[in-house]
Length: 109
Image 1 (cartoon, rainbow, N blue to C red):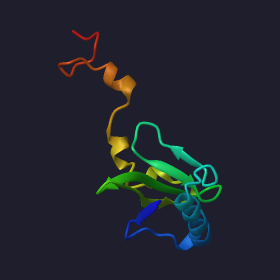
Image 2 (cartoon, rainbow, N blue to C red; image 1 turned 90 degrees about the vertical axis):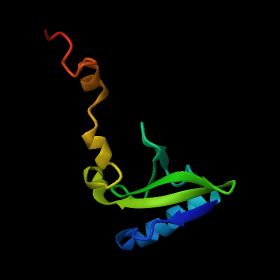
Image 3 (spheres, rainbow, N blue to C red; image 1 turned 135 degrees about the vertical axis):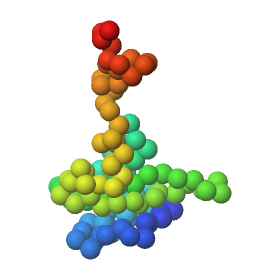
């Protein structure tokens, strides 16, 4: 599988695990890389260690599929991830269902 890496991807703290995981991904062995789809997003994560993750997504260009390696998330700090910043700004589904079409909460007069 073809892999493209984000230029500013910081792998200095987890270089050995990163190289091992990228080898699994290139070989198409997603089970060995412990890949999981992140619900409600186009992103996937691969487990680098017990605490660290590699964030990636699939892309295609010219009829070929690529893995786009986007970010390493250290110590499971998903709340500081650049890719997930947009999710904090969007209200949850339950909060949206309580808001009516006019922007007022349902049940209000």
